[in-house]
Length: 288
Image 1 (cartoon, rainbow, N blue to C red):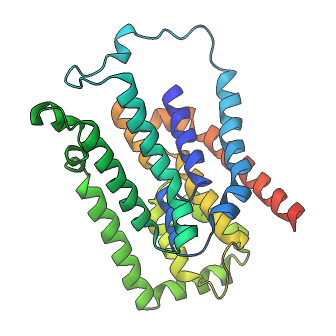
Image 2: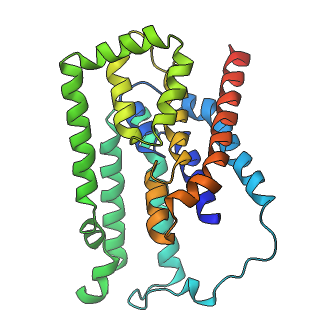
């Protein structure tokens, strides 16, 4: 249950930040949302989508949590002190938080801000560990970390975006948008459906498709549709254990069964999803 709540929390936390989730980052890079607006509009709904399941789960949990003594054992190969660890951690978080500021100040693409932060972190760690020998410095270097990049996942997302680009170029996405507008009609309901579908289909292609179906000329930057889409696509994946990267990771690490999650957690995630959506819509209409 704790692992399931972590999945819900991870998805909720990524929805309100331009660098917190792939889909929100896509909308930010595409010009559909801005940093200040997305945080302002989706922070409270995302928080509600977490707090509601957390309160419901807390009523089921009784007793004391026993923490294993060996759970905090560090890899003995990493011979570092607390200052070094805190320095690298602080620099890493600061570089991530600097990316929206970098984009705002320079107008350059966010990936340049990430590369700038990586270069800064690389230089500082090399200077910090300059007195270590190569064998001791190896596991602590940025170069060592770069070798562990999940290339398969990068290529997976590249393939998805190329496919979506092909569908957009052949006007198939325009036809899909027309059909959805005719059959469903209301853009709020369409967005809720997209969020629910993200529990079954990966939210990256869904958001990429929405970006292709609805141009900025129809829904301009910071329109409530884009902000609501960021919330729905980000938190909707919590409905199923396979609906998000966090869920898949938890399923592998904690051996969570799909059916168990469906019976015990899905209904909690659904309640949180619609509670947060209701707060978003109420907040939107009150702030108009």
